[in-house]
Amino acid sequence: MAEHDNDGQITEDDWAAAMMEQSATENGADAEARRVAADLAAAAADSPYQAKPASHLFPDFGAPGPRSGALNDFDMILDIPVQLTVELGRTKISIRNLLQLAHGSVVELDGLAGEPMDVLVNGTLIAQGEVVVVNDKFGIRLTDIITPAERMRKIRG
Image (cartoon, rainbow, N blue to C red):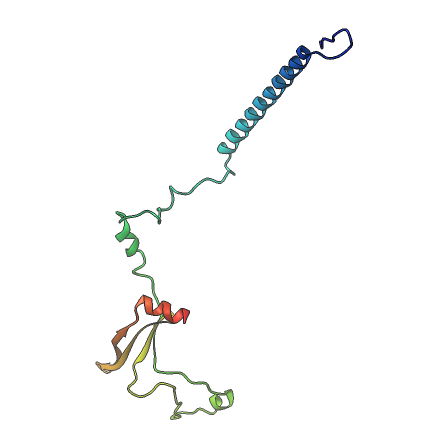
């Protein structure tokens, strides 16, 4: 449909018509691409294999302010058992000397008499104390509790 002048040249009217035709083709392709993208998004939203947020399953831990269930959340961990150890001291001994130990043998530890004993929970130092006897059983009286800031300083230090 291109119009040519008498010399066989394409006129401005031909150029404008060609540009409009190309624009119409591109707009149609863009519309088709948008339609296909919308169809894919709709299909993915309904798919059981599509990842979805689990915000309805878990509380928002980043939310500011107190939560109504905070006390109940804390109550959940109160019955979890932990290993409490009171450490009098440590030593290194060769297997030869270990095999020679007998009833009445004395093993020297690095802890000094009268020095506070370390109290560990699951291997982490949480306090120090002194040994006491209560009803013919040994116990420990806590004399110093390690603050969380001190624990972090020991880990980094």
